Image 1 (cartoon, helix red, strand yellow):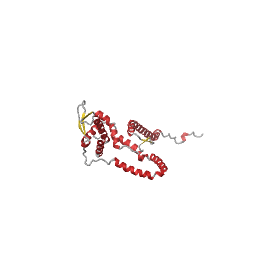
Image 2 (cartoon, helix red, strand yellow; image 1 turned 90 degrees about the vertical axis):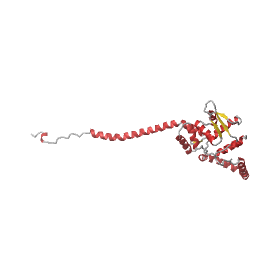
Image 3 (tube, rainbow, N blue to C red; image 1 turned 120 degrees about the vertical axis):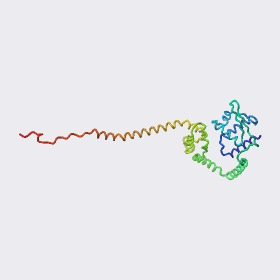
Image 4 (cartoon, rainbow, N blue to C red; image 1 turned 180 degrees about the vertical axis):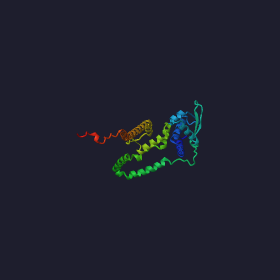
Length: 268
């Protein structure tokens, strides 16, 4: 069996399946490694823990779903074993026997043809621009600086579906994945607003570790806002109470008697 030809055909067929995710490809490659170790003999015996470790799949549900999807689309044949001491059996098809449920699955254009066209055009461009090597160096430097400045528009970031699956595998809600994606999508996938992100999974794990801190900080701010509003209401109510109490405590002064002749000594 042609090793490279087989993998090229399998990957070309997988490109035709729209609902395939990265974990489908990683699981098939893990099965292919096991098949290669067994010298391409069918069936091969596998264990779930080993395949999850090799394919980097953290959830048993995701592993089982990927395995059933590979069988449903004709890439493997899966014979499950319900005994934990006995591994399940997997049959992988050879290059000639690979089938796909979708019609018209063909290989993409050969890379050699596209590369030959690109090399021809590059060769012509280099011949035409050989006299302007200094200008090209200056242009390349300006392009580097502009690429750094326009980092937000040129950075390659993971799709939201991959982030959602990763957060689900780690036991977090979809809303956290949305917050993570929206936050770094808004700042151009920069760490601290300056450094380009190199590993989005590491950033996601830091995000998960800081979820409790974010919630505590939000609760503290809400508590402070509530205390400030309560103090403002108490200060607003104090003058009204003082006026009411002042009205109750004030008493009218006794009026003096009207002057009369009896109040004064009669003249001698």
